[in-house]
Length: 258
Image (tube, rainbow, N blue to C red; front, side):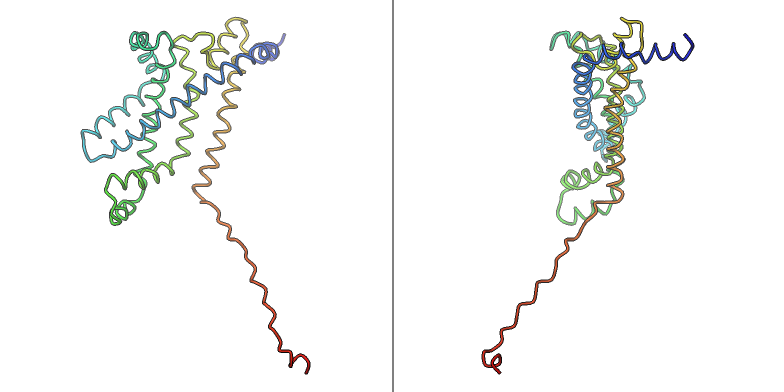
């Protein structure tokens, strides 16, 4: 068999891919989405708090937020997952048993919060100072102006960057396999890896990568749509109204006979 035939047999064997499809669909995709979506929700909430603390005038809020962001953005994701998943494993066993998902979600959420916090901070700081001044002139307190006006405007501006980071989070969820997963807890990557180890063929791992593409490519196009909508604004179509038809003028009876 020539080199190209060996490559095709090793990475694109249809029989190996077909055998892995049921586990990828019924187990891998749901678990990957659980990890990514749950971590994204928690990371978004914590990230917003970090963003507000990071621009606070109080250094006791600003410095811890900056330190948190620097640490969790600087550490490799695999190191953070191992530190949380292995370091807190004894406490996890006492609380929820041997399930590695809570600690895995915690680690991914801490990582996501650091990136989301920086994204939101840049968006909030991009809002013109006049917006805050106008809100204060209308009688809003500083906290109310930030909560109701400045923060929503800033978040709206960085939605494309937020979606990009969500895509990265979906891919980082594959690192949870470091913590050890039971058969029904495996994500896409772990299922592909197990199949490759059992069969000696890498085709299932390539198929798992294709599933990641199916999850992330639509989000990539969503980023483009959001970015285009935010840059161009929503197109307003004014309704076309026809002028009302003129009512007939009544003619007096005498004039009609004449």
